Length: 184
Ligand code: B4P
Image (tube, rainbow, N blue to C red):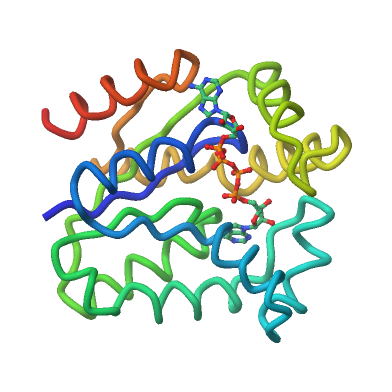
């Protein structure tokens, strides 16, 4: 049973690696960013509420992402495990998740910290060119990451749930290191 959370700055490769690993392990890849972008494309009420936050590089309000994670984590395809990509992104979201997993007997999750330096992630994201990948918005996302998300490294480390992978290598090398780290 694999229950993995991916942490790391924007552009560290969370989306890239968590999809590869989910396919390899045959468990669902649950990306809050992908779900929010789809909701914006479909102009659902969630998408309409989330759009301005995402366009500015801010986190969307906890309640919106917590509701969607709660619903998604209990679909039938999650019974053999899951990978959460981009959630939690704040200590409040981590506490929410820990309580949810404890209540439903699903604890035993691990967090993978995929790290890469700012100049590397900025050049990757500028190369990708998504709507929220302008230099100004990327810099804001990095600030939000440092203020809100980086504290989760200590949060999971203190609970002996942290695994660390160097995101500053080729995608194939990152995948190899990741598979080794989760098998250890
Ligand atoms: P996300 O969709 O999670 O996106 P991200 O952190 O910017 O990117 P990721 O790290 O997944 O990078 P990727 O692999 O794609 O978040 C977007 C927004 O959604 C947030 O800013 C926020 O507004 C909102 N949101 C999401 N979750 C939320 C939550 N829980 N609470 C509140 N708000 C939330 O890689 C990037 C690029 O690098 C790609 O082009 C890729 O090809 C390339 N790349 C990857 N690995 C590489 C490697 N090893 N070498 C070279 N290039 C590489």
